[in-house]
Length: 125
Image (cartoon, rainbow, N blue to C red; front, top):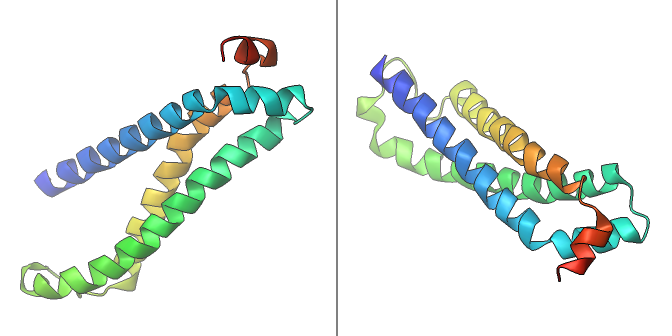
């Protein structure tokens, strides 16, 4: 039960970290997003742009994490209970869960970016 709680806490921390970073990037890119919308970009194009940039980083991180996990689990093989060090189901579910959390965490700031008024965005910069 304790391991489960630590897992949920880690997942919540990663989601809030991704949300914070994407929110910061979107707030720094308000001028660019305003220009894109003023030039005719549709809101779904802006949403797709932000989500694809974030998800590309999340997938790269998942692939690098899988490689690192494959090396590190060999060190802790004696500590694992009823799971092989390179269990593909466990590693796959963990990776897909983290990528899914990244998708949900980046959707909210991306959705907020689509509601930027181009006149206001261009006025402040």
